[in-house]
Amino acid sequence: MSVSSTGAALLETGSRLTVDLTAVRANYSLLAARAAPAECAAVVKANAYGLGVERVGPALWEAGARTFFVAHPGEARILRDALPEAVVYALNGLTSGAAPHLDTIGARPVLGSMPEIEEWSAFVQKQGQTGEAAIHIDTGMNRLGLSLEEAASVAKRFSAGELGFRPALVMSHLVIGDEPDHALTQRQLSNFRSAAALFPGVPASLANSAATLTAADFRFDLCRPGIALYGGNPALDRPNPLQPVVTLEARIMQIRSVPAGESVGYGAAETVLRPSTLAIVSAGYADGFLRAAGSSTARKGAEAMIAGQRCPLVGRVSMDLIAVDVTALPDGAVSPGDFATLIGQGITIDELAEHAGTIGYEILTRIGPRSVRIYKD
Ligand SMILES: *Cc1c(COP(=O)(O)O)cnc(C)c1O
Image (cartoon, rainbow, N blue to C red; front, side, top):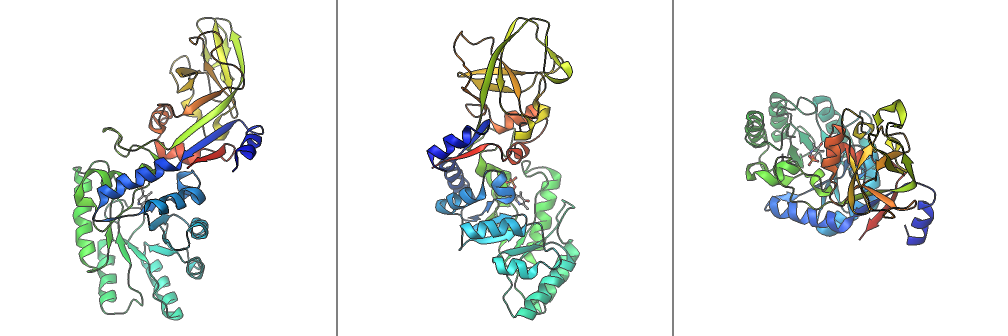
């Protein structure tokens, strides 16, 4: 989007989301260096965690990523248009009847059940193709993936040449990737080692962001970071080595005074205790600023940066508006038309998530289409 059309779009909405593609590339480079000698893929499901896969995908490609993971064929199609040469896997599996569709897109399914294996095998043999696909093994998540017994039977058929295709990847997913020493993580690692050994010569993949950064044991041949590319801290008990990627700003519509003892917003959830000055900011839960991050007399909510200072939210988050207490700012420091920073300037997605009782992943993927997207390159 050009500067002038961004300006025009900003007159028609309340907020802007700036995505720093330079930071995305730097985060990829850091992860790739940690992953080496394993390959570092990029997980770009859910529209690159909400940030816009048409722009984020090519930035990751420039940084060196060649293998990408999405959830659905529709996401694979959008990525394929942006990156004609990328290897693209669809994580959520093979929907019955979707094999020709995936094949047309040029995406590989991640096969996670026996019926999916049968359907892909039949499709590939009918078409006489190589039918590259990943095999997902459940090592403890109890979500998608073959059991270890099923994996063993598939491996037998593969070595007998009965499968019709050669698995291009064998993978599993960690339940508590940020705790490498946890008993469950260690059990998954040992289960995955046994499962991967059933498919000699097939590349193996286990690590998400956290496991890519924390312990070499988990890296195998291919790492699959997602959240770390977008600046989220993959292990919250440690300092974050990644650069922040997003800034969310919303316009201040009014500055107003509220006498002591008055409540602010829906439900009269918070009463101001002193004469207060409020900035009324043009973003709310419909923009993905979660209602759970609101404030009440009983429980403090999130903060926003206004005129370079942290200022607390007051009262509930409405659909389209929030109120921020700017009483502590010097006179004239803030005016209508200025922007409040809701994410950025030191307010991380993880901090906002903490206030909303959720995780950085949900903060990012909920940022709504109303925010004008600006890409810094
Ligand atoms: C989302 C996802 C990832 C990436 O996880 P992060 O925690 O975002 O790094 C990797 N593998 C699978 C199977 C996933 O679903």
